[in-house]
Length: 206
Ligand code: ZN
Image 1 (cartoon, rainbow, N blue to C red):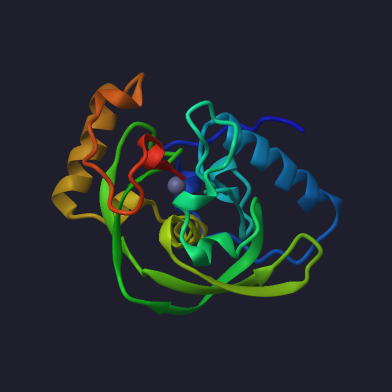
Image 2 (spheres, rainbow, N blue to C red; image 1 turned 60 degrees about the vertical axis):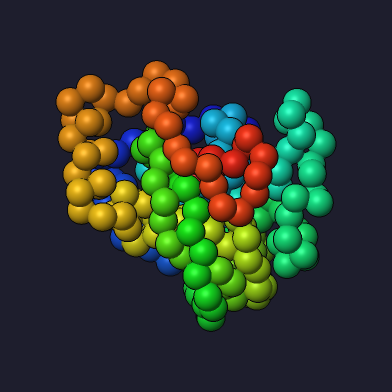
């Protein structure tokens, strides 16, 4: 496994639209392993291939909440629907088959490190995609997992969470990054408390 470099805004590659995955061979398996390692290393809960400069419609996700020491998973903090989905999750060519309701969440992004803003998404999503072997699978979920999948799917369209907030808020973040770069520690930017889970690990980096 190898750790990959995560691209950050305003890298132009983050604005590209990704290509459908057609080759489910060893290259995809290697990408999956490397992306997972990269995501865990960055304490992220989701990572899309374009964030590491690969313009493939491919995501890795692991939203399972860990305990304080980052070891055991606190499954009781997950919704029943989230618990039904086995993680880490690898999805190629994800498609939203259905979406219901709305939820808001304070999203962060490994490509916009240190910044968090409230974004509105579907509460429940039904997703179809291919696994690492190219087999099509389908599942329905809600909670943080639903937020994360929708956030990651945006990356495949060349969209960041800062493109989903008000023009004013987005401009403020962009000009701050342009002026002084990224904060050294994400704690330097405060984020309001999140709506879905109450633990400290709440702020999601995706
Ligand atoms: Zn992201």
